[in-house]
Amino acid sequence: MSANLLNIKLEFAKNVVRQAGGFIRQHLSDDLEISEKSHFDDLVTNLDRDVQDQILAQIQTTFPGDHLLAEENDVRHAIQDGNVWVLDPIDGTTNFIVQRDHFAVMLAYYENGIGKIGVILDVMNDNLYWGNGIRSYKNDKQISLTPKPLRQSLIGVNTYMYRTNAGGLLDLSHESLGVRAIGSAGIEYVNILEGKIWGYFSNLSPWDYAAGAVLIAPFGYVTQQLDGRPLDFEGRQMMMSVPSNQLAALSAYLK
Ligand code: IPD
Ligand code: CA
Ligand code: CA
Ligand code: CA
Image (cartoon, rainbow, N blue to C red; front, side):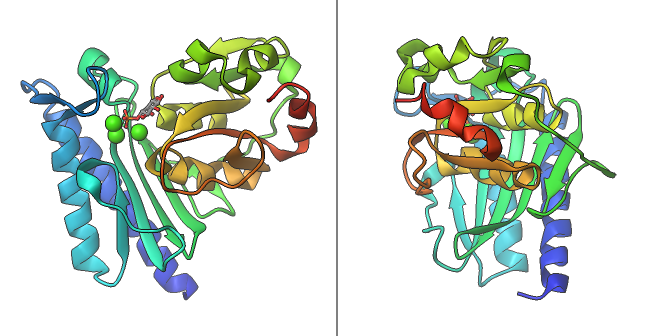
């Protein structure tokens, strides 16, 4: 694909995500319609669905040949097959419902499985993180980041990993300054980009990691399964986003 068309898609992605953030902030005081999906703690609101519908409709109108992979309503296209937009309309839905804070809108664009665009909006701070896999920006400023060694850093986890010691993560955490769990994969990726955490260990679906993986790649980060295999962009998988030059130190801990 030409660099020009990719730039058009990048500007489009930034715009639709910013618009979605404005829409959510306008509706913050509304009564939410909240439904359970698989379990009492797996929730979705009318705003998750509205934001997804709005963004997917804009993609379909503007780039009708492209495909969609999105969290709500079973919108699933294989990541390896052509031009695929990956959307998490509200990441951190539980935070959104309970805290009205610490949630994100995330949109990524992949070509035949290769990440080309990643966009994450930290909605309540109205900060847009965006990149093309080569450079990443916070609003208008290019991000620079050199991860510190694990022993001088904090790590991010999700509560499933914490509760179950999945992959031996608790042992690994003794090699860090401590563990934090924010409740939004998107905000965890923001915290990596801000240098606030060294890496993120979680069990995630493709829309949870697609944008973040593109945004942190320029700084030497890999996003992969705990055992090093690639993520499949299909089901939920135990995974990590960590500096690739420090992977060797992890292998002694991760099972
Ligand atoms: C969830 C959040 C959470 C992570 C879960 C995800 P959602 O996404 O990112 O931090 O622990 O695994 O499902 O459902 O709020 O978009
Ligand atoms: Ca969800
Ligand atoms: Ca999510
Ligand atoms: Ca979501």
